[in-house]
Image 1: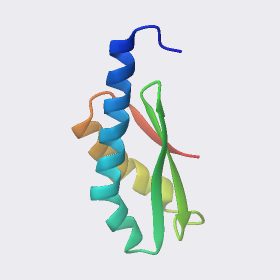
Image 2 (image 1 turned 135 degrees about the vertical axis):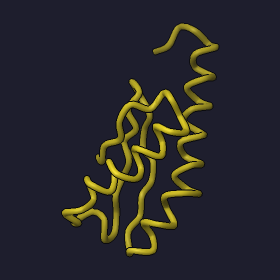
Image 3 (image 1 turned 180 degrees about the horizontal axis):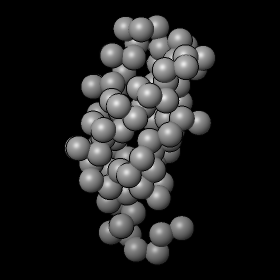
Length: 86
């Protein structure tokens, strides 16, 4: 629990930005290959995403997360340190 309401608002803003970036920039790319990606949580500077469809069984999914999703999120959202599948 976060005792500082200002920090909580910032956390909510960061989560909203991450959700927007994934929906607008990453989801169409992943969807084109038969997969889906959705943010699940953003806590402790880590973003957890759900990979579904073709992505869930793909041996390339962790590489895609690192090379594309994590890199782009870190570039746009300085609070993000890493991205991991759930």
